Image (tube, rainbow, N blue to C red; front, side, top):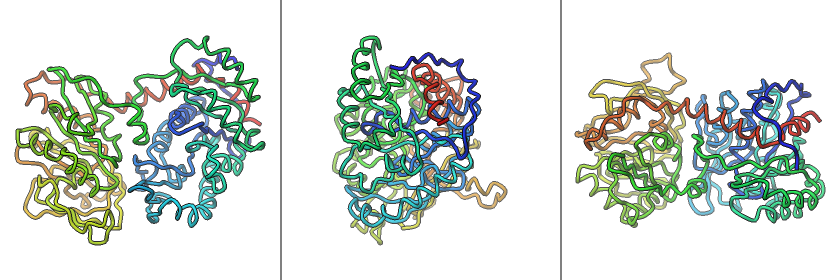
Length: 527
């Protein structure tokens, strides 16, 4: 095993890389082994070392999206990795995004805009043959503009049934001539078998491209692992370049529902002096990173509710975004969660809906063109006098504006983003607490428009704006309003979520520096 004596003091790397940019690629023995966070770690490390660095994932499948400054949609992980690099995200970092809509069908987003819905077979046969050119062109632009590009693979490179049309793993590594680090998750068990099995399945030229192994999510005494690592290096002929311990408390977002399930947000019950906030765990939940800042708030217990047995007595219920509003509303109805939600509100409980959750709050959902389902019409929750018509055109915008919720009629600045395919209109006058406009039109004040709806007592509201809870002042005042109604002491200071997130990037980078042989990584970049 490599001698990983590269602590945080080893930041003064002065190596110059050849042009075009140097590359390194992280591939995994399976999904959810930690590739996305390790990619972010390397991005931040290279940034700290004075390099111009960018992330790249040719094709991502995720329901958590990120909207670029020019209003395009990419995978949330690549947006997060761009933040780790300290640069604005572009669609070149994730030129193809697959957003599952229902079993075996995904919306295909190319360079930030929806192309079409494909089932798995149709996508492989009709689109993958032409996708390679899009991927190569996007990567070439990143390579020309940076010193280092850190690539992330998808799933496993050993999926023999998918290798013939691969554009995300070893075939991509060959196209761009990238050395590969193979990442394995020891926390799930079977780490040696997963590494050896993956290496055995790879073709000889693919095995040659693998330059080292990183064992991720380790818990315990690493000295007890030494004999196994020695055996592994002898067995596969590759060095173990690092054993990265599990790192608790990172304030960095997860990418998909699998990560949400792995985290198991069934936390402890809220104490009497804490707020109990329940997010309904829709089957097709999307953009659940909206609620990450609430998870970091002192005195707040955030939990995800799947069925009526987990309901409890929440102070607030949040209805999240969804990739299929109609089917997830049917789930609410059939599971009994709709009934509990309406009873909660009737008893004076608080609720909020974001994007699809907001659409569900109206009287009717109309789908004349079959955008979401075969149902032309579905009754909503009936919380607001509004109707939503689904359309094929998709809105993706970063937005800025103001909100009055929690401010006694005064306004507070907010920013976030919109991603939706519906248009909502009101059948009766309502109070709309948000006033927003596209961020790209900051010099055109006449472009402001009203958004959302709020009940007369202020306890129930909805908005199309994702990341509303990422606004520290809004979140602070809204939570204090809930505390006030519950008779709890008010929080005196805002939690600076953005600062905590930046500190998490640095903490992650320092952690990986300490446990990965960075000298070996830099050496492979100079080849």
